[in-house]
Figure 1 (cartoon, rainbow, N blue to C red):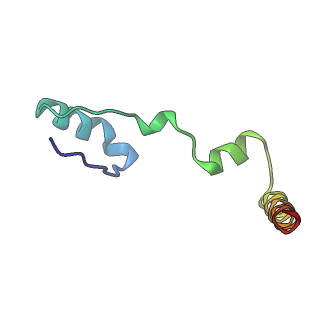
Figure 2 (cartoon, rainbow, N blue to C red):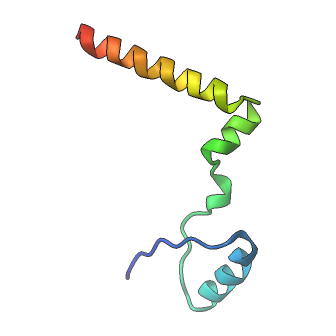
Length: 69
């Protein structure tokens, strides 16, 4: 059996799944259950600028940590 990874537009997901299941295809995971990084940002109400600052701090901390090893 072959494994494929496909991207399906949200509006077509149900139709594509129905067709594939009708052909005997096994669908292992549902991507709707997984959050995108942008979804996390929305859920904690963080601005892009705040996110950039946080990433910068993490990067700087990592550089300091690697330097101290």
